[in-house]
Image (tube, one colour):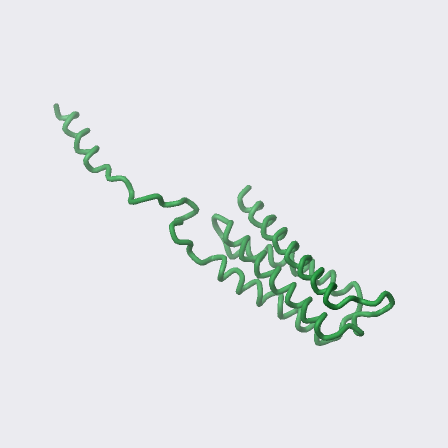
Length: 152
């Protein structure tokens, strides 16, 4: 249970951090005038925002799915849903063009799905959350010794 909650929290924090860093970068590239509305921003500003949401949601969902021990898809979708709510709150704080709203509604589920596909890939040297350090120990010789001792 603790690992489940922690995996979602870490995924959401990772996603929000990436979204915020990308948004800061976008605002540096395309500064918003003081009295401007979102509709007056250049196309590049909208593209940067979609890229930020894409990277943040895919990374957050993937990290959450990777860290979860079971029901990994569910953990990824929960993190992605929380990140989508975070992005949609930002989206509806001021009016945006209709095409951007539609693009945002596509970006969140698609990026979450692709991020989870990456996060669910098996990691070499890892099995069910435990690191494999070598071949499994051979207990057959030890078992034979015990059997001999029991017969004597």
